[in-house]
Image (cartoon, rainbow, N blue to C red; front, side, top):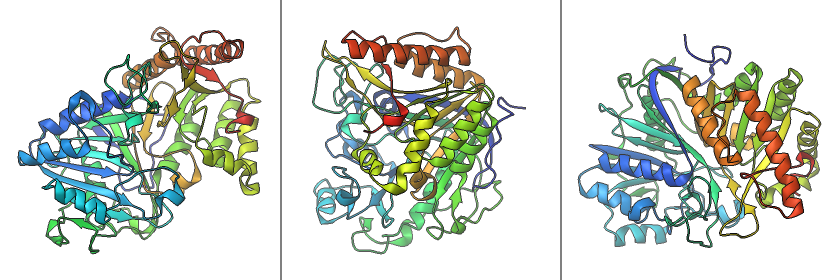
Length: 469
C-alpha cells in the first residue's frame, strides 16, 4: 500500500510503477544544476544526457564554467560521457530566438577545437521537438541516479529560489540582463533509474542522424551503441515512481523491453504522460496545484473544470508574459475554443490563475517566467518533467515525466513552492487551506500591483480570459 491509492498509475506506457525509490525535487535551476554538477563530478563510470535547448554562453553554478567544461573535466578523468542532442535546422522558424546544438559544421568545429573526448549523437524530428532533458549517472552500477525535468541549459534558467536577482550570476545582489526563469527538476535513486536509462539507450541507438556525416561525434561508428539495461537498481527508499513519456509512432522500436516491463510496442507510439494527467485529475479529491509554461490543452481544461465541479480546489501558476506564440494563437480561429474554455475556468470560485512577479533592487515588479512542467494532487501525488500541458507536448513532441506517490515529499514540495510564491510558510496548513491562501494572496497582490504598492510574495492573480493578450 502506498500513498495516493486513489490516483492510479498509467497503464499504456513502456514503464510500470516501480517501488523502492528515493526522490528529491529540485526547485529552480541554480540548486538543480548545483546538484547535477555534483553528481557528474562524483560519477564513477558514465553520464548520459538528453539535451533539447542549449545556450553555449550558459555558466554552471559554482564557477564550473559552461556545459562543455563540465563534461570535458569528467571525460578527462575517464568517465564515459554520451550526449544526445536534438537537431533542427529550421529552429529559428519554429521558435524565434531559441538556441540549440544542431551538430552542423560550426558545432563540430567547436568540438574539434576543444579536443572533445566524449561521444555525441544528434536526433532530428521534422516539425517537432525532442524535448526531453534527462541525466543518468552511472547507469547499471550500484548508486546509479537520474534527473528528469524540463530545465533548459540557458542562462535564464540558472536562477535561485526567491528570484531576487535575474539568473546568470551566482551573486544574488548583482543585476544582469538575463531572464529570470522558475523551473523544477526531480532527482531519482532506485529501480526507476533503469527506465530513464532505458529511454536513453533506445533513443541513442536509434538516433535519426547517427548515419549522417554530421550526426555523430567523433565518428559514425555503430560500435558506440549501448546495451539495454537488464536489471533494476537496488531499492534506495520507499517511494513509488513511474516514468512516463510522449513518443510518436514509428520513431523508435523497442529493442529490448525495460526490466520487468510488459514489453509495450513503442513503435505504435506512447502517450502515457497524457494518460497520467487524466488519471491524476480525475482521481483528485481535494486540491490540484499546477505549474506550467502552457495551459492550453482542451482535454486538461475540461478535466480541471469537472474536478472543480466536484469541489476540488485548483491553482495554476503560468508565465504572466507567455511566449509570443500564445498571443499569435489567439488570432487563430482554430484555437479560439481552447482560450474560451480557459476563460470559463475563471467562472469557478475554486480556480486561481496566477503568475510570479518580483521586485529586484527596489525596482517595479517584473515578471518571473514560469517554465515548470509539474502538477501536485491532494498532497500525495506529483508529476515533474518536460511535458507542457498542450496537445503538441502530449501527442507530438518527445517528452519524459517522472511521477511519484508520497505524502511527505509532495507536501514538502508544496510548502517549498508556495513559500516561494507567497512569502509564507504553509507547513501548518492542510493543502486546501494552503491553496485558499494562495488565491487570497494572488488576488490581493493584483490589487497591490494596480495601486503601485509592494507585493506580498510573488504570485499575482491573472484573468484566465485574457491570458496572453
